[in-house]
Amino acid sequence: MAPARMRAVQYDGYGEGAAGLKDVQVPVPSAKKNELLLKLEAASINPVDWKMQKGMLRPLLPRRLPYIPVTDVAGVVVDVGSGVDGFQAGDEVVAMLNPFSGGGFAEYAVASVKLTVKRPPGVSAAEGAGLPIAAGTALQSLRSIGAKLDGTGKPLNVLVTAASGGVGLYAVQLAKLAGLHVTATCGARNMELVRSLGADEVLDYKTAEGASMRSPSGRKYDGVVHCTVGVGWSTFEPLLSATGKLVDITASLSAFLRAALHWVTFARKRLVPLLLWPNKADLEFLVGLVKDGKLKTVVDSRFPLSEASKAWEKSIDGHATGKIIVEMEG
Image 1 (cartoon, one colour):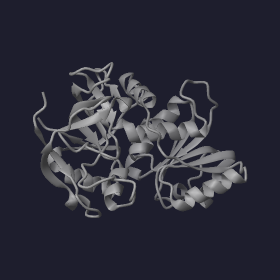
Image 2 (cartoon, rainbow, N blue to C red):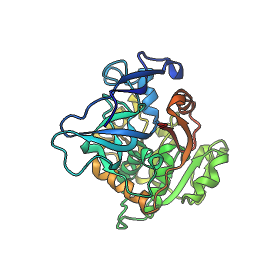
Image 3 (cartoon, rainbow, N blue to C red):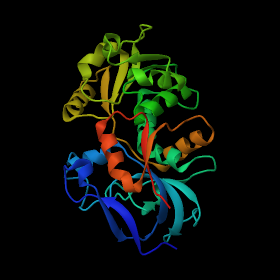
Image 4 (cartoon, rainbow, N blue to C red):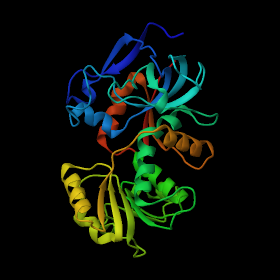
């Protein structure tokens, strides 16, 4: 049984960063139809979380204030709502919470069965919590390039920018599982890590060679998983193969306009803005890869819920290697 009230961290206004996060006591939510009540063990921060707090997704998100941020979580089922099949109290799970209601920075949260999967033994809460947005985005980016993780795809050449970030580290690993040739950019301190996860060529983005993003082997890229900002289409266009795609996971309005132009003009080289389509099948697939030892969640740092503001600040700083995890004590 869950208690009546719980600890949580929320914000009630825009633009205050870590200083705007407040420790509060709030009622424990209840599971409605097709929902599960979870006792949370871990949550992972994604850039979209603090971008919402900055007001960058207004008026869409957050829907209302105050708001308990973060959607990517792992925990244990403590109660099931009506209409739920396949889950029971005690099940360890990974879930992506509804971004409209959030709830990850708390001791308990409600998740839809449509975006909750069981977490097998051997997959830790931190490993699972890192997956939904970051690994899901990496997987869907690679699929949009034409990569297939069942071994039936072509041996494409791919570039992953910001390869030591949350999405990038998953993208490198998934690209190698798909049999692709991977060139990656990252900071000098992370080059060996990125190489150890499968990258064939690793460039220090602060060098002239790295800034050019040209493959040292002279290969044109069939696809780019672009995980950073400040570098536009004109830089990538000459690096792409005849039908290459630039998949932009942080697309601006201008990127969407260029993508529309490419689509209506039947351009062979294309910019493809990626908006994650969260779904249960992808999450189950990713959790299975972690269970089988084929995919690794690289944890940058761990913070208790009482220090969530420090985790928030570190994510905003933008230099984390992998995932920043907040763990619920007790």
